[in-house]
Length: 340
Figure 1: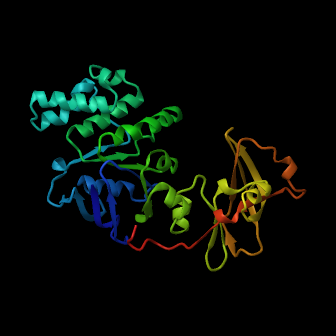
Figure 2 (figure 1 turned 30 degrees about the horizontal axis):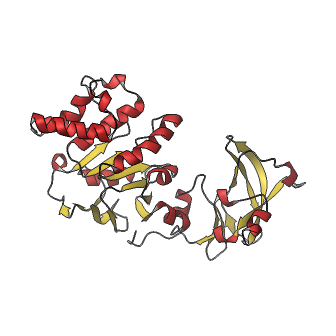
Figure 3 (figure 1 turned 120 degrees about the vertical axis):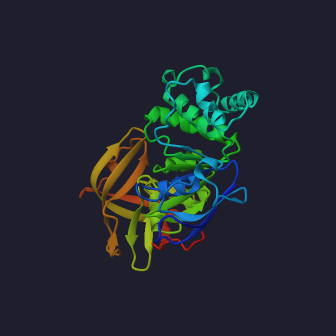
């Protein structure tokens, strides 16, 4: 278990407490300069603006040096020693710690089996695929019996297909290690694909932490909702709060909502652009709403597939979208209060 008490990602941040269970994968989600790196460096014992008390299995790491912490860190460019075999790469922290040969062999075999790279141990890193090299880097981090594994945006430099495949297989492999994993990302899809838990960071502040589904359904404020949405949420200022609509909840047909016993709320968008990637169509435009004092500058609807918009397009170039009132959020834009 990893416990962070009185955590401040920067001196001006509101202190919070975060707790992550053994065997749990926690996706730390945030955009650039949100505090993700500060959080990892604090846990690893490296120089950082963040401060707070770090406990692993109820043991304080305050007086434990970086090299002695039960923490493994894998950077974005998961570097392996190029002139050593995969086996020697995994063995390297064990050799540094003076572990005897029989124990090294046992640990390497166990880690290789967990990460499904047993047949690759005699190969050199250059002979491995990108996904295999990533697993090798993780294996080396686990070899020192790390109880906490820090993965710093490990998918950011991978192509789309490799990223999709690794997302599917990596989660189960990591859970089999029983290690607490902090996996930083700027892509909210990783939270649902990998995470048992998601922690949202913005501007060096922890906004919210919980299961991905609970955070998605009940964001604590506008910033949390927008961060945990791809693309970002649509909003309008009602004067007392923000009325928030996710792009995927905007539909062209009222009937689908009423058939599900929902109340349909209407939004009219003056269309500026339409884009598609095959699986989804994105409609972008400006909101028509005399009730709003202000709104997000661009409203986006994310529609499944490639629907024909022509029958729905009004003569003035606008589209009317319908949202189930149960999916509409009423939020404020307040910072965390330390209970994340």
